[in-house]
Image (cartoon, rainbow, N blue to C red; front, side, top):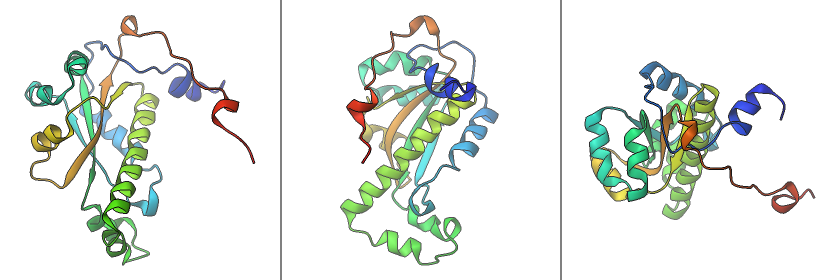
Amino acid sequence: MNDPLLQQIFVEARTHNGWLSEPVDDATLHSLYDALRLGPTAANSVPARIVFVKSPEAKERLRPCLAPLNVDKTMSAPATAIIAYDTRFHEKMPKLFPARPTMGEALAAMPPDQRDFFLLQNASLQAGYLILAARALGLDCGPMAGFDREKIDATFFADLPWKSILLVNLGHGDPTKLYPRNPRLDFDEACRIE
């Protein structure tokens, strides 16, 4: 864990609740996506879709969707990523998996409960990649699940087949607003080797 990048991404990085006023420019968000899209997903399905909420108008549309404890930290964040999955992701499979032209049809034919799990699992992987890529680019993150999913979907995806799964505030965190780091489980508490 002495590698500088591991230090930056895991050891020194923290979940932020307060933000400095420094903006996150669109070029950084493009770089962030260019990095996270390369992370592996099952069948290269990359089902995550992201809306980066930055403008004051979009932030106000987001406000009523948030749990009360998440309002202030989200309104003060320079950007908030709404991470969703595309229920019609299979339509992109001819581009994403050209070696198997029928992959999209096979994924579309999955039983609904298996398909929902597949989408949640792979979009969640991509959410993790977003956090790691953001930290590698020098951004701080504040992921959170405290929001009304139906309101988010109706407000931001009314005309799209997307379903929200996670919000991630992005920016440069205010270190004076950090809580002490909570403990983590040791290897023997969380892992075993067989």
